[in-house]
Image (cartoon, rainbow, N blue to C red; front, side):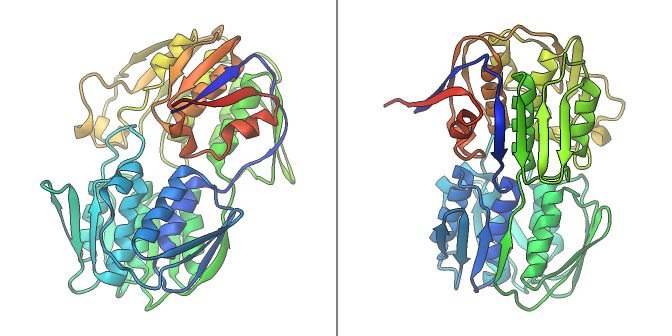
Length: 443
C-alpha cells in the first residue's frame, strides 16, 4: 500500500493545467460502445477509474488504444453481455453499460455497482426509468446481478425522475438514443457534464436536445457513427487547486479554463473573501486576507456541488468564526470529519430541523439511518497541525491532502488509492507548485 508524506506550511504558487473531466470521460467511454465504429476521445484523465472502465470494455470485446491523453475506442461486437463482479465493485459507472448492451445485444447482466462509500447512491431511479423504456430488469440476490433484457427492443417513452439524478439522467439518455421513437425525460439533471455528453452523442449522429431547463428530448436513431471529441477540464480539479492556493496563503493560476460550472463556488469565495481573477486564458486563485465564515447547503446543479463540500470544510476551518455545511445530496458524507479533528479542526456534527425532509433532501429518506448526520458546524480559525490520517473517499482524500499542505509539520496520509481514482499524478503536480510531498510504497 502507498502513503503520502507531506511537510506542510508552504505557500503554493505557480501555474497548472487541469485534466479532462472525470465525470465526462467515464460516461463518454460508455457512449462509445453504442457504435461499432472507432471513437477518438481526447484529453482523457489517466486515472484509475478511467482505466477500470477501459478494462470492462476490453472484457466485453472492445479495443482501446492510448496515445498520450487520447483514447481510441472501438467495439465492433460484444463478446459478452456480463460485467465481471470484481470490476463492477470498483466503480459505480459500470452500471451504465446496461445501455449499450441492451441497445445492441438486447441483454445485459450487471452487478450491483461499487465506488466511493458516500451514501446509498440508489439505482432505483435508473431501474424505474429503464422499465419505462420497455426493459425487463430484475435483481437476483443469489448471484448479486441485475438481469436485464429488451425482448422487443428499447421503446421511446416519457419519464419523470422523482428526484434529480445525474447518473440516472445520463443512463436514460444513452438507452434512448437508439430506441424506437421519442423519449422525453422530465426533471432531468442539469449538470454541465450532462450537456457535454449530449454534445458527444450528437457528434455521433444522435438527436438529443435540452428543450427546457429540466427537460431533455431524445429522438431515437437507427445507428450511430464514429467521432472525435475533446473533453473539457474537470471543475472538481479546479476547485481542488483553488482551495489549495487560498488555504496555503498562495497564488495559483489555472490555465485554459473558464467560469462555466463554477458560479456557485465563486460566489461563495466572494462571500468568504477568497481571491480570484478570471481572464481570457484561465483563472487565478489567491489568498488576499483572513477568511470569513459561511453557510453552505449542497444541492444538485445549479447549486453548490456535493463534491465541493469536503474541500470547502477546510476553508471554513480557516475562517474567523462559525461556519455550517449542510449536506442535502447524500445521507452519509462526513467520514472525513474525524480525520480533520486529528489535525486540530473543531467540528460538531448535527442534524438540522427540516420541515419537509422528503422534498428537501435529494437522497431517498428511507436510506437515512440512526447515526447519520447531515450537517457540520465548524469553529474557526483552526491552528492546523500534522497528523496521521486515513482516506475513505476521493474528495475527502483531496481535503486531507490540502489540509496537510496548510498545516505545520509532517503528516502521513494512508488510503491514497482513493485519490488515484480521480486525480492524475496528484502529488507530482502539487510539487510543481512548491509542495513538499512524496509517495512512499509499502510492502
